[in-house]
Length: 168
Image (tube, rainbow, N blue to C red; front, side):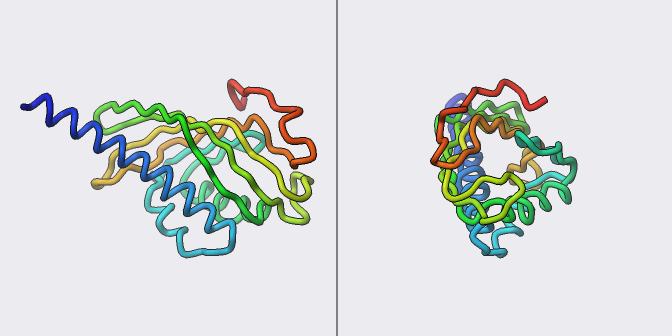
């Protein structure tokens, strides 16, 4: 019976991590990019104080404040619309810690003038490699790595896509 309880708990924990990624990240970040500030609190509550974020093409961010600035201010200055789609997750549980890999395909509309210089609609794709910790009865991100294979307008699309192994 104990083995069944452990298996159920493992499935519940993996489902909670899926909810964290699908709702707290994908849906909330898409809303924030579209101008809704309300989901910021939801996202912030799931970042550890010492969270690290490393997105291809951007400086490494250390700490909740830097990551919040990136997600809540910088990303909306580059994107006017996004529709995050994450699939093929591989989640590994390690007691009160976990890790996951997710594939990303995200149709976007770029802001008319943005630091990337990309115009119109496009695609961002690649993988997220993430680490989590279970604190105060919720899963939180301790590390988010976005290995972005392509960030392009639909004019260029996949022509320059290359699978990244690392950002550094």
